[in-house]
Length: 156
Image (tube, rainbow, N blue to C red; front, side, top):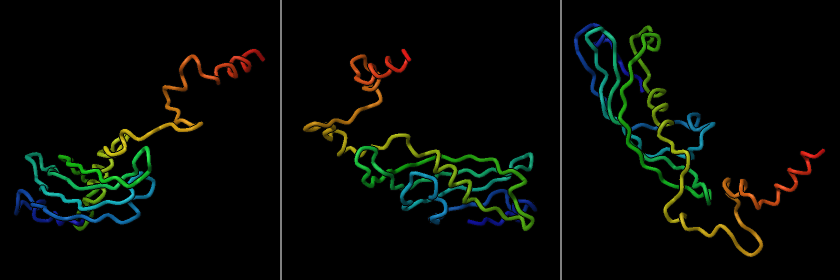
């Protein structure tokens, strides 16, 4: 999303209002856990401050499709985030334009939770006939059969 800053820089305006639905290409999704991005909306403005610096502020909200940590099924994660970013002069190009997509994307990445569990999967059975899911805490217990192996390795 390219924003023309010429009116701000030349003092014809003191702010530029922005309200737009945003679509991110698949390139943005690479190296993330996000499967899809749905219905992202940004509403805000770019303002010129007293010291002639520029600031982007507003609300970014939408839905991300993330994998459930237990079942790996798609899970819709809804977020809303307030943004306030000072715009550095080096990211404003010579035509006095700025692409705010990278800034918005960084703010979306910050919203991704470390663990995503669909409420319908919170009580999923994690053990069965001859198997059980071992959690990180279970590995550290004293009756762990791997502790004997660790002791043998230490003796050698």
